[in-house]
Image 1 (cartoon, chains in turn brown, cyan):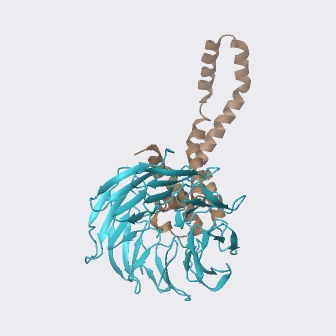
Image 2 (cartoon, helix red, strand yellow):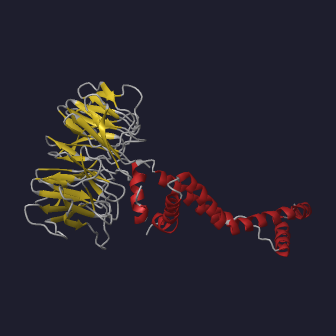
Image 3 (cartoon, chains in turn green, red):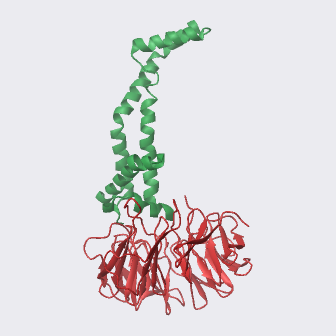
Length: 141
Length: 348
């Protein structure tokens, strides 16, 4: 199975089907379905977003101390890195903490974008593609 | 991404087809090589199947132009519009009464003179976009739309006629007319038979539970029998009058997975030819009695990892199939194998 097939099976197709299902539930309003699905994605990813915000805030709070260390050990990069790691450890902050949640959220947003583009069926290929990607119960327009 | 799925047509031993890189190519079946190649400029995607009439071959492009090329040399005789474009053309044009009728993504039908490409008329917008081909019978043009209407338009003037058929579900396929009845595939996973002039369908198939996918390809009707390929991987053979299923065939791969049928089936003498999306060619002998779970006379594969979305044609025992990798495969039905194939990728 190629990466694209796995991606479609696990992420893209479920998101597309949820989007179409929402559109059915909301009386065929595709615009509302997009808004509702965006809200759902935001809610699902909220724990990650919160962790990202928390990490960013902690990093921000540490800025004066980091600047202090930079002033003190600016000429000795090795020592500076050691001291900064020590500082992060003591504060219980992972410097990559704000990146990981973002990386995990990326596929969700990409899948949402792809789902919207697929559902719009702007080209004949994308319309035909819907027949393959939608669950049978949603293959009605 | 729009790649196009122009189908093949054979005329006097020459195969005409549009390519994925925006060319119209004529392949000489005797020499099995390109006779000429015409590049659409600027390059355009082609979904329509070429149409031969007299000494010209016509094609519509996704960039919204209609080209008339000479069949001998492949030079352009005319282009419509002379400058600019109309909406994208997806449905293949049709010709009747020295007029070429074109459906366009701007939702309108256009009528052009076949000889000079002069504008005759355009209809009022029938839908947001028209991706199916119109069908002409007598002096009327019928067009099916994604929003579930079948419109009747005067072939002479382009004015909308009184009768129209309205359905809740959109129509996926081009309408086919047989003895004043329109047969058309729908997005609600049914095939409809609608008598011209009637407000209610004569029948819909399957009657109760819908098929597993859309009836995307236009059905064909012959001697009171409808042959309809479906994206659920089945060919349904239906009594044209009653809508009763006569038999069906499941097109499955080696793992038993059903393979969608995107292209319309083709009749050649007493043979029904079906090509599925994976390039499996099934031939049914209609002169024998076929029952449910019909067994094809022949099953021929044109290759591994082949993707067929184009319409195909059959003539004198040969089936001409274009795949999405830009190859033409010519299948010899008697021999049960690919007789020859030619790549359309390289301009010769």
